[in-house]
Image (cartoon, rainbow, N blue to C red; front, side):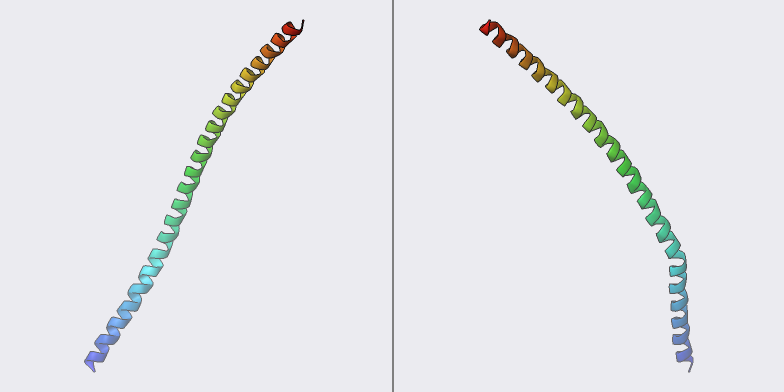
Length: 85
């Protein structure tokens, strides 16, 4: 009979342990998940800012290229007009 009570005691202690772990662990897991989400959002905002800066630089380069092409086109137009005239 004592053996049954010992096993019953171990089962009850196991259940209490599991309930304690779940009770304490769940809020910790939720807090950790929220922390990771906040960190990911922060990284995402940094990536967005870096992407914006890269796109702005690319836009400046494209504007420079466009001005160069326009100057070349104007030069070619003047040469053609001089050649006809």
